[in-house]
Structures are given as structure tokens and as C-alpha cells.
Length: 587
Image (tube, rainbow, N blue to C red; front, side, top):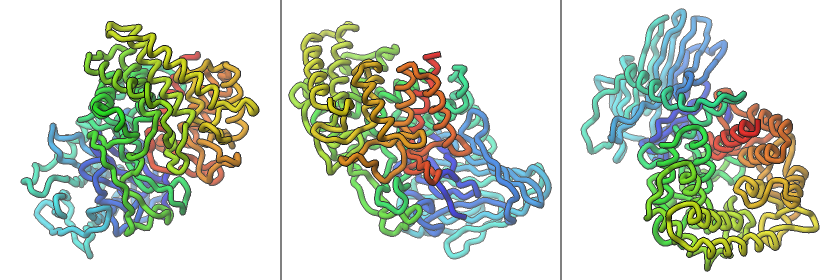
């Protein structure tokens, strides 16, 4: 099977995640955390690098799949000449404070009598190391270094050159469970997971959580699915939200932009808070806000664009040379060198995130306020510092317009906080600094000849990040400079109803897909301008590129009609949620 990104569905439990192909194969699974080495890495390698397949022996006549309503439980129904069978996939909710992870797969007979096959190859260190394994009374046990796996099932397993295989038949009404449990190898094996109980518990939790979203609009199902995706990709202990659960999925097929997105970016902060708060999920917003404050506390000079979900700083990048890459896109990279970059917009993201949370009733303590003051005091002397910008353009260090806008946001929000709360401070000092930064951006980041904001001072490139200006309140949406910028982006960065991130110096668009978050920002700008019909049409056009289970990647290539980049991408789903809220608010 020639696998495409859109062929995959996500199962996740707020600790880790797996991607399940429509043919019933888990081709990506990291244990026990989102950023742990994969034990199934076929997604960016071959089946020998780890996979877990469950499917009918005969080629199915049809395959239908979807999530059970309001949950992260995936159901894939195979129709064959012998009958119909359902494959139910999910990752069980964590066992209290335990690090144990249970990946549950249940085969359920719906009609007839269907012969089935299972094949499982588990490898440690991103598919590089073949572990020790042996058959036991409950199935199989696998150990490699600190990682121990138990594969439990009532079906008899056979080992074939490092792969665990089984054949069995499912009749109507039968249920056959397979549970893969991870635990630390130096600890005693945990008790067996009851697959039926775990399924009931997972469905109950997800339906209760998703039921908090009660807004009525034409896109409710799409918004709810995006919110479920965001929740499942947030760490239930720290509140941090990862960028995506994958690494190595290319922005350019066969190219080298194959990054690792299993970390937490400050750039997602404000928009994720908006998405959660406006959807009724205040506890998630509180945890995310607390993670922001705790992780960025300390030396303001050491603020990073990206961190691990536990707040750890080092994310050293390496090449995984033993993997062939998705669609032969090499090198496959683990880690992300962006942790060492300077991105001045991060200060604005942190402070604006705290501001949004405070606006919506989340309590702020004196220590939290003091941390915001430390950040703006640092900016007072360093706000013109060059960086790599929102898109991490390491070879183009400079003063990025969007970064300077977000520095203005940081100072502006602190002034507002002082004015609208009981916290003491010199708001006039920060108002004066904000005005100075605002003027500097308008003087240096705007091309008067072409009537558009530019990517960075002194260049000719246009950047869709300018669409955030009215969203964060830097300029009114109908300011002539914003009108000119929207027009320039529509003219130079828009193709087939999708928005690319930026142009190069010569005006050309990089060889990559359209950036879906930017496309949703355009929807918001059109709505703010009163171009409601165009905004709605564009939004629904973007919804059409979701795959069959409602998921989006980072980019979309309208030429090949393919999703590109890591998947599913939080930035894209946050963009969807906020654009829907904007359209609903303007009704």
C-alpha cells in the first residue's frame, strides 16, 4: 500500500500518541511519552523498523472508519466477502500517577466469520534496535534497555524472525482484545489492563470532556474534533501542548525539511488559550498558562522558542540515518535546533497568553505579575535585538516585523494589566515604550511604495504573519496599511484559496505546501473586515482538506491534493477553532 499522510488517524491519551493507517497498521508509536523514541517507526522507515498490523486475511471490499462520537476512540470497519469486522483502537487513560501506558486494540465481529491476521514488530530507538523477546502464558514479552513491553491476548502468538504473528477467526458477536503495555524494565510488570473496562473509561472521559463545548454553529463537529485533537496532544501532568506527535513528515516530498515537532512552542501560546477558553475549557487554559509561567521563569535572556513538555530546555537535533524517510525524504531528524534560536516574538506570546487568561478570570498571583515585569524590563533594553522570526529562518537573522509586533504586544499587555488590576506599576513607562515600538514597526516594517508590511526590516519579502496584526490589536483591520497588506497577501501568497507563509526576496513562494494556520488567519481577517461571505467560503474550503477523520497536517499542497508536514498539527487545528469562533462572533 502506498501510504499517504491523510491515510492516518490519531489515537492519544495526553501522555503519548500513535498513528493508525486505514489498513489497520500502527506505523508510529512512541513510548512512554510523546517525545520518547518510537517502538513503531514504519511511518518514516519500513515495517522492519516497527509496526503493529491487525486486518482481515482477505483484501477488504471496503474500509470505513471514524471516531466514536465525542471521543478519541477510533473504529475501522472492514467489509469482506466472509463478513464484517470492526477494529477499535485507543490508548487507555493513564493509570493514576503511573508511567504505565496501555495501547488497546479490540477486534469485534459484526457479521459472518472473518479470518484475521496480526503482525507486530517492535523495535527500540526509532526502529534501530531489535529487542529481546519471548513467548509467555499471556502472549509475548519484549525488553530493550529500560523499556519493557507486554503483548497480551488470548490468541496464540508465533515468532517469525523477530515479528510476532497470529491468525484467528472472528464470528459475529466475538470480541478479541490485544493490549500492548509499556513499563520500566527494572520494575515489576503491572497488572493486566482490562480492555473492556478501559474502553468504557476512555469513552466516558472523552464524551464528558467534549460535551463542555456547547456552542451551536454550522461547523460544530469540525471544531469539536479539533478540540479533542488539542486535548489529546496536551500533557495531562504539565498542561503543555505539543506541536505534533510526529517527526520526519516532509514539507517537501524528497526534501530535507523533515523536522521533529513533538515539543512545545511558545508561538502556540495565545491562540491555544483563546481556543480553549472560548470553547469552555478553562482548566486546560489554566494548566497551559501555568506551564508558560513556570517554564519561562528565570533569566529573561534565556527565553527559548521551544521546550519539552516537562519544561526541559535541551532538544539537541540529530539525524536518524538508519531510516529511509517518509516518501524517501531524508534526513529524518530527531530533536529540534530551534531551541537555540532567538525569536523575539516569544516574549509577546508568553505575556499575551497570561493576559488573555487573566482577562477571562484565571487568577494571577504576585509572583506571576513580577515575572511579566522582569520580561518587559529586559525588553526595554533589548527590544530591537535581531532574531530568526516566527518561521525559524536561521539563515536570515534580522528584525522581523512580526517579532517586533509581538514585542509591542508584550509591553502593551503589561501596561493594560497595571491599569486594569490591583498590581502596582508604572503604566506610563510601558505606554511610552509601547508607542516607541509601534512607531518603529510602522516606520521600518512597512513598504510605502507597495503599500504592505514586509517580512523583516530592509527586505522585500511579504509574510502572512502580518495577518496577526489586527488579531492581536496592533492595528485596526480597516487601517489602510492593513488593507494594503491583506491585498498584497491575496495577490502574492494565495493560490487556489490557500495561503503560503511568505515570499522570498525575489517575490517567489518557497517550494512547500500552503500553510494552513496562515490560511485560517486570513479567514479571521476577512471576517474582521466584514467580508463575511468570502471568509465563510474560504473556511469551508479549508475544512474540505481535512482527512476522513477530520485531521489536518501543517501544510496542504493543492497541486497534488495532499497533506504535507507533521500530522496532526496543533497550529492548524488551533487556527480552525479560532476562525470558527470569529465567524460565529460576527453572526
